Image 1 (cartoon, rainbow, N blue to C red):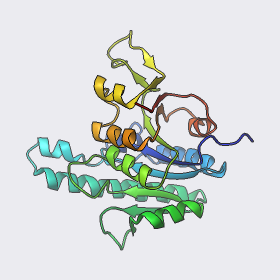
Image 2 (cartoon, helix red, strand yellow; image 1 turned 135 degrees about the vertical axis):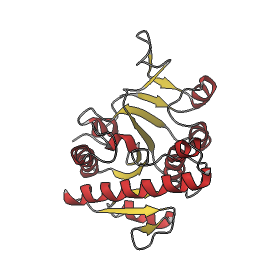
Image 3 (tube, one colour; image 1 turned 90 degrees about the horizontal axis):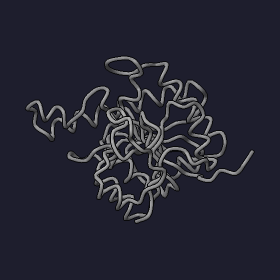
Length: 239
């Protein structure tokens, strides 16, 4: 088996990725497929952490746009990410993996508090670790939470799973002539305002020198192929 190009990675999934063809919530079939992909990569020798959004249940910014207090909306969104994290933990453990959920909000009866040293220890012990509740603060997205956690645990690569196979110069769903960009610097992404992650997440990765790969998670076996160094999707790194 070839050597892994990346040993410790953080995979960022949107909450919507768990819905499958449903209009709301979690599709168990999709959850199981993602869990199998993660375990396949873990069994190949990778240390894997995950961050999952909560948009399939609540999205704080959307609630605020409907008139709710933004802080309250974001707190509800953070709790939604805990629900998704627990669902993923269950799917992983049903397949025999060891998994821990760590929350930026204190929910001790449900999961562990996030403590960086403990998180790193879980990874070193071969446990798949899921970071929930974003950064624990309102006004920050789970993209920013994923970038922050990836930096804190010393990840070699941040993986952003999307519904498209990389970054395009314009929306490929609306423009037939959209061109896929195989590699970009962080400054290019920020300057061109490419809406793949929020600007704060890009800036964190840029300042820490953390590479980011954006790819389509729906392709079977794609996670392990990336860890083996295949140039899939779009790589963002450097200035």
